[in-house]
Amino acid sequence: MNAYKTRLEEMLATLTEELTGIGIHDPQNPTNWIAVPEKDDTNDADENLAADNVEEWNERTALVAELETRYNNITAALARIETETFGTCEVCSAEIEPARLDANPAARTCIAHREEII
Image (cartoon, rainbow, N blue to C red; front, side, top):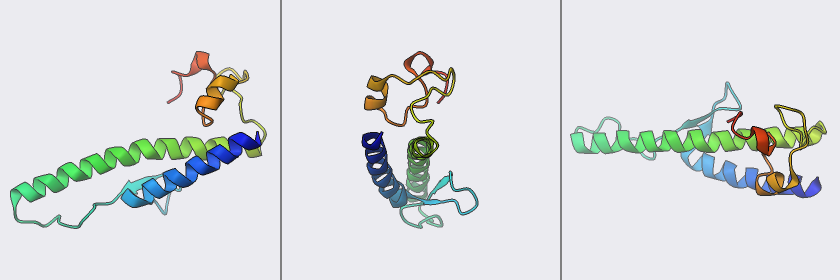
């Protein structure tokens, strides 16, 4: 269990660093991250630059959403370690296969139910 906890904490540190480079924590919802623009050129008069800014914003928002899901799964896995429910499938309550946890220590389900929770 300690090996999984160590890996999860390392993954969380890396992910937090990635997220803080492109977003901020929502002060009203600790499970939510908000993308921030790389540069504040929102009032640019040049239509091409404005379009580039919108495209960049959309890319950053999509990336934040993906990383946020991983972040929340890792923090949930760490919480399950503390409550001693780590390694139990959230769908059927069976033990999550060690190979699955080795591949993804934040896994929430066994292999049979991997498609049921995103």
